[in-house]
Image (cartoon, rainbow, N blue to C red; front, side, top):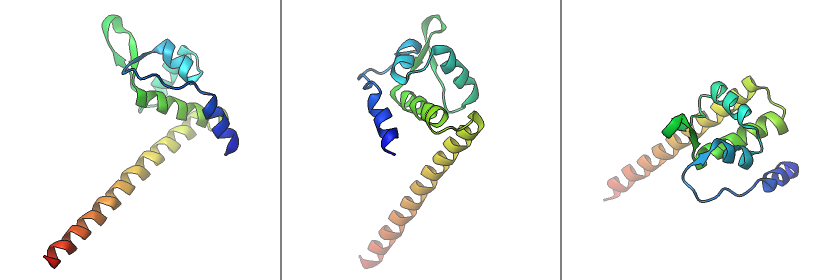
Length: 116
């Protein structure tokens, strides 16, 4: 775990911009642009925004996603298919945990209504 944190600390901080070019994304995530374009075709979660001249732009969330993908592939040793499964499992668990929280809130609200 410590080595993973050290590698994350080595990453450049993400500037406070809304959109980043493919070159900026490559520098921030320490990958080459052609790798990023390949990952776009493999990972459905990674979508760019195309603007003038068909240029790719990325958001802050997408930078975090690419850093996660890079970590799974290069540092944790996952294959591309394994990383896809891992990312989809993480998204599913986030959805399930939010559903559990909502059901807990609903139950508490119903109990409050009974008291009133």
